[in-house]
Image 1 (cartoon, helix red, strand yellow):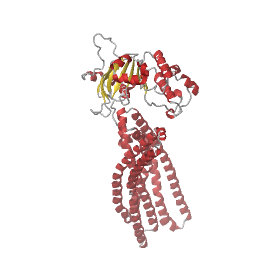
Image 2: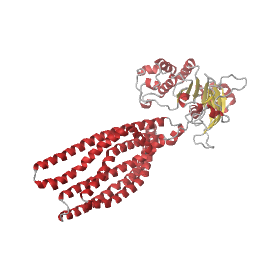
Image 3: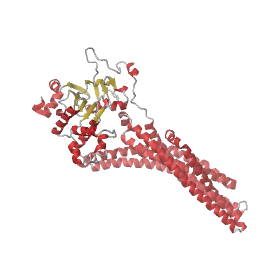
Image 4: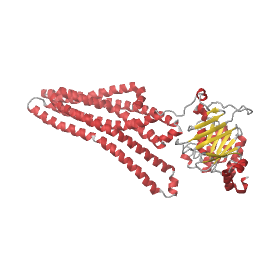
Length: 588
């Protein structure tokens, strides 16, 4: 919570002004019962209607000031909490955007969504209420006690006896409730995960008639969430009845003791009326404090989860050249061997090994080595799960490798700032995303590219005619490209990757939905317009990569072959088998 409260620092003066207004209004509220008591005991016996009216006007004025001050202070509180949480949400979104792939995997996307939405909402609600009631309730509580002690110490002693019990109840219940609210938020993460999976895979669920199965799965996580929320809420809710019982019991004794003192002449009737009013004020103040503690318990659990993301250290360290050169085998600039050109390869993998789960038995890539010159192309092929997409994610440094080196122009990528590194690439990922924007915005992606570059990219991607028929670049795309066919989506995604004229183009299974004619036209236009761009193509079809300068064959994360199409047909049984299955007699 302490970390999240730092977002209130820019608003300290505004909050102090709001507290001063709230304090003034609360004092006015405390004066009303005292004035009523004075009217009953001192003014009424004088039989002076004018004096009664005068003091009545004072009471009305106090009530009006209470209303105005509270409304004013509440508006200030709402503005402060709004602006503070706005800044918090921005920083949280920024931090999430720059988490590494392994960190996102660790938190999980459903959990990050929950932290970004319901957790920040809990903090917003708490900050708002703590400013509104965090000043008013304690002042009413303490002020009520002070005034009642001044009016009649004997009756106020009853209230003092109850205070330790009420404090103990609140402390014990709050201590138990915070861990329960943490569990409830974790259950909310699970429910969002199931909802997200169902929303994404709704077509598959309907096609396979798995609706009831998914309903049962959702019902299970929903029941768990309900159970955890109920347990936390019921535990916290116990404080209000217990405090209410104590105060109402004390109120009974106050009435009995007050009636006895009035009958003996030790106390005036107006005093007991005022005392009962203050007792009610104290009761409401304690209930408000109880609600604040409930809200704080939820917010504390949420703050812990939000702070966990905000304080997560960046695991993508940018190494200085000196740091790398001090480590054996980690020189930043690769030294060319004797007799080789001075210019280093554009892309080079040196004995790269990587595992998502960091286990020796489950390597996703093992000892991968290859080099690629400027303007050359590399095709990557292999069965599902062989590590094809993992390889390009390592090149983009979405994950850090476990062993080996990855170099671009002879420079280790761990020595390049991430923004500088990724600006070199144009990428189409497997199952890539289209946004609910226009065609132009989906291609440009906020890069402020020229229309000439965008139109050239669309031409190469064979999207020119489709865009024209769709109504031009201003045509609207539905969320996730729901109003486009698979081939249309891929052509827009390829246009996006090409529009920035990248040094390195990565196409991860990006032509699987294109027919052979369109795919061939795309390859031809790509070679013509982007001949100097180094290209990595991941494909399932041999026809999409057979033209590449090199082809890397992967199986279970291990290189089974590296060479040209003709070379691999002779030297790599895995590649030859794939080629013969797909192309038959045309494999050569």
